Image 1: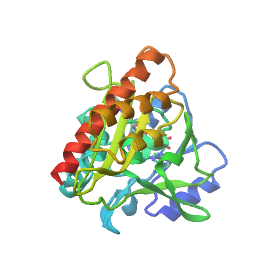
Image 2 (image 1 turned 120 degrees about the horizontal axis):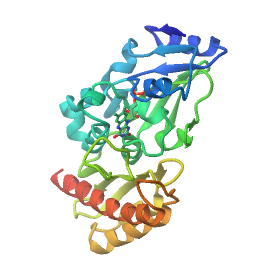
Image 3 (image 1 turned 180 degrees about the vertical axis):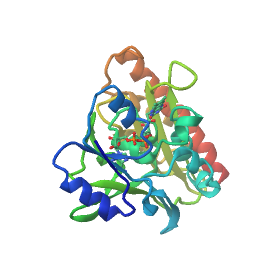
Image 4 (image 1 turned 30 degrees about the horizontal axis):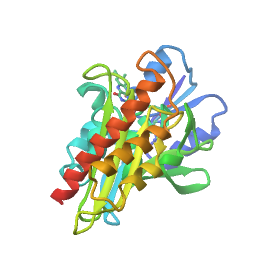
Length: 286
Ligand SMILES: Cc1cc2nc3c(=O)[nH]c(=O)nc-3n(C[C@H](O)[C@H](O)[C@H](O)COP(=O)(O)OP(=O)(O)OC[C@H]3O[C@@H](n4cnc5c(N)ncnc54)[C@H](O)[C@@H]3O)c2cc1C
């Protein structure tokens, strides 16, 4: 097996394109190395992207933030302004694993591992984040909800790498939140995850919302009817009940040792309500 550590995206893309065998991008390695040790995959080439500056930076851009795909959860948490503006995204990334795992794990790896239960993905979707993808044909942007197609299946062509995520400007009186349910207190995979982002007008009426659910379908979902339940309301009990019903209706979960289908569907509604209430409090605080 070869290990390469390019210093530019162009070099990384060329390495991926020119390898005929199984090649993998290595970010934090917290999924990849586990899969290699258990022989789930046996790459002939590993391309370590952590030496590429563009992928390691957090920058303010176009009123929002551009977060490099290889920025770790620990680094996100240390960025005071990002944490203030998009707390749901930063909190979601920091639910991943333990303190040690957060020192390595990246949002790019969380998305590209292709798990429907990945914690940072519903938070990014709720935030309206776009993934900037670089490949042999240049750069393109894709909404995060369109990147993962099915478990372990991504909308990335051969040679493409996620370079960064663009978080949009956050309007005044907006808030976001991410909650997940796990059977243990930490270090477990989400039974359900839910991200909510919403905006209020001067009268406290919700004018925009995005709701995303994880671990309840083959891919993380953007649930438009759940957002519609909030828009036009003051996010009162009636709206929260509609949100709960819409979130439940969107679920197509599996049964597994962490929860039955019925359980996951019920929890999705509860988490959506609770995440919306946190987002609401944050939006009211401005
Ligand atoms: C003990 C433990 C606990 C965990 N707990 C959680 C948890 O609570 N929640 C959760 O969601 N996950 C959890 N995970 C899984 C893992 O930590 C996360 O998915 C993490 O975000 C992966 O990021 P990484 O940088 O380590 O990815 P890597 O392992 O480096 O890569 C993962 C996959 O993505 C590809 N890849 C990485 N970056 C890119 C890129 N920029 N462009 C294209 N492809 C790329 C790699 O080739 C690989 O296939 C846990 C893992 C461990 C070991």
